[in-house]
Amino acid sequence: MSLQFQLIGYPIKHSLSPWIHERFLSKANLQGTYEINEIDLQDSFEDRIMEMKNNKKLNGFNVTVPYKQKIIPYLDSLDKHAEKLGAVNTVLINKDGKWIGYNTDSTGYVRALETKYPELTKERKSKHVLILGAGGAARGIYCGLDFAGYVNIDIANRTTEKAREIAELRSESTNTKILTLKEVESDLSKYDIIIQTTSVGMKPNIKNTIISLNSLKPDVIVSDIVYQPIKTKFLKEAEELGARIHFGHTMLLYQGLYAFEIWTGLSIDIKNMDEKLQQVLEGR
Image 1 (tube, rainbow, N blue to C red):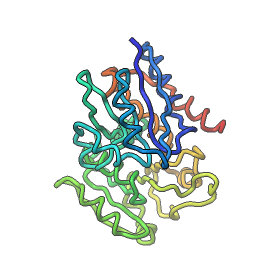
Image 2: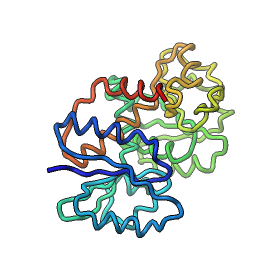
Image 3: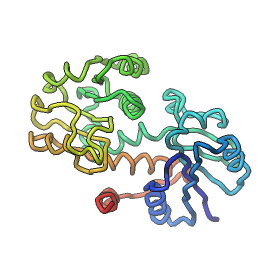
């Protein structure tokens, strides 16, 4: 039996998802394909989705911008993460033909971070986390940390309205302060983990950084979800100040891995795949 997976979104012609999932299939000794299914903004989204519904060989698909919310009315059910986030990036088509929506971004990020720093799994409640930014990625990461059991998660953004909306998603046991970027710059020493979730520092604007890191405490973990370049100016500055750093491309890998597990029910060893993905990205 050959499995069939897809990615929908726009624009996605240069997505690395096919590279990632082809290697997952190989590691799992499964026959299958993972194809790009780009849906132009001028196309009828409903017609294209109906074409997919009629494809009885399709086993599942990923969803990326701008369709993570738009796909929801076409699904039969949502898992709790997707429901809480109001966004879907993975769809399982079960044996009855039902379409079930998931969001693997949130869990994928936490798994990527804790794979790099496994001691965090035992220290979640004692760690103070700062999220920089309040967009869709920040929302997913905030909920992922909250689901995992981190209870002190602050959010800093240029304006605070969107950050407050994210904080409303917190569990009863989670404490969250909302700060401006200016406010947090002088008070970074209280944080054990700092996560940059915006596009600041992405190619071609690689000289940009979201805040000054001069008040970091020693041994803090600094993470940046930008992966072009792999080591952003933000991460370079953090490393020079003695921080431990975490690269953004590993989130891409682990959210894909969780999607693959949902589709196949299999766990695979992806040791060294982050280094290989890094090499691919650095070659672009």
